[in-house]
Image (cartoon, rainbow, N blue to C red; front, side, top):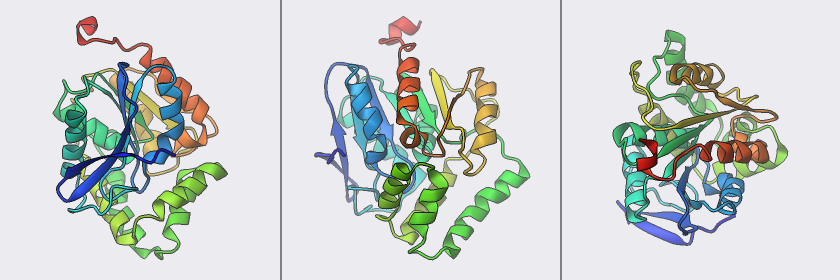
Amino acid sequence: MVNLPSMLSLRNCGLRYADSGGNGVPLVFSHGAGADHVMFDAQREYLHARGYRTVTWDMRGHGLSRPAGVRFTAEQAIADLCALIEHLALDRPVLVGQSLGGNLSQAVVQRHPDLARALIVIDATPNTAPLSRKERLLVKAVALILLTIPAKELPRLMAEASAITQDAQADARRAFGQLSKKEFVQVWRATVEFLSPDPGYRTPVPLCLIRGEQDRTGNIASAMPRWAETEDIDEVVIPDAGHIANQDNRQAVNEAIDAFLRTIPASKEAQR
């Protein structure tokens, strides 16, 4: 675990982060809803050892970035991530996001296409894909379902739904237990704010899609393959992994990210 020694103060919240430094291509890891920076420990260590500059952080209201200071919203999360990139003067980082972090990273790339050199999404739906009537109803129903779950049971149930290995479930319970039920529901509602159908949109930077083979959360198992087809790329399906694929099967995800990064030019000029 990294203790996130650095802090960026924004709107009554101290955003905690860790920056490995160095001259390598920078990677910014954004965690899922209710999780924190710990979920990327394996990726941070693996990729830093291969010469990359790694940045992990806790979104406001999560992990060590507490209290949230202001209400957690999609717009605030976008502003926070952009401010962190600017604060660290990162040169077109690769944005890596899991679940909520994947939706956030997509939104930043869509809004600021020149800010990042590539996008890696782990177990998240595409923000711009059209939603079927059933999917729209499901999105609306989840927040109501969460409200019916007893607060003391929520961390365990969410962990069991998110991960299949004991270690990943244990860490998910730890992370989810840091948020109150009210806070978690608010974060979930903010996640929905990222969804904005735009069927003609295509990701303007190199894209890598990674999905746990046993991810049964929401519509990810069907949405990510459709997304990959739309973008004319192959998704990477991770065996022996659920929604938190990067913790369930760390090595497979590490290798998938490393292989993708090797295809990314180090400079913008090289992409032309």
